[in-house]
Image (cartoon, rainbow, N blue to C red; front, side, top):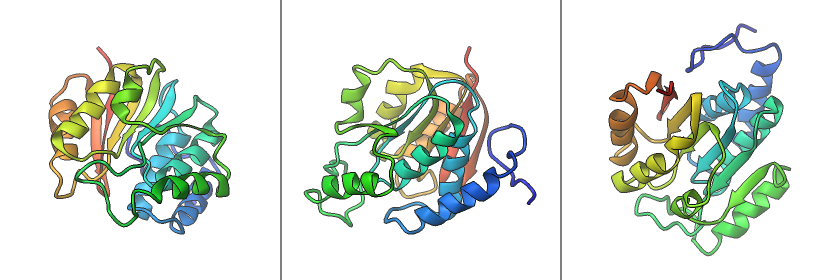
Amino acid sequence: MTPRATGPEQSPVPPGLDQQLDDLVAQGMQLAGHMTAREMRFIALVAALPTCAGDVLEIGSYQGKSTIILAKAAARAGEGRVAAVDPLSIPASTDPRDVHPDALPSIFYANMREHGVHDLVDFHQMTSAALGATWSRPLRFLWIDGDHTWDGARTDFDTFNRFLQPGAIVAFHDVLHRFEGPIRVMAERLLASPLFGACGVSGSIGWGQYLGD
């Protein structure tokens, strides 16, 4: 199978990984959530092919769809840990409302156990701001899919961007959506910054590669 085009500049997909990603996306399609197959494949590819050393951090887990994909893809890479943070209380005005807040924690933890990733993810049931107060680990992939307001998306990026390693990927979900936050933060913090190089869009994911100073 011919390797598919990827976002970040890198070598072709290693033999066997293409089918593994397809299988992972097929599993993801069976899970409740708000990601397309194209978007799931993108985050799986970034998690599976490290562009630098460091951890993967997910901001906004909801029912665990992207968390499961990231954990399984990153396990193949053997580089760093996967961490995720979400208060599981649906606090933001932009959060989806297809699950009652009281039911969300049990759904999320059940999904982690059922799909065998409970021990692969360092999960923090709190706000990203609270986690940021104690975070100290370098990052190779920062996946932002939490509060989609301008203040929320900006705070998520500003809190954790200092931990990005040269070559790291930052990605925002829903940049092509009615919400202001993700697209504005991408434009102002990534596209307008000399610290970022290659940038692009995959589905409704906007991404950029951190270069460093």
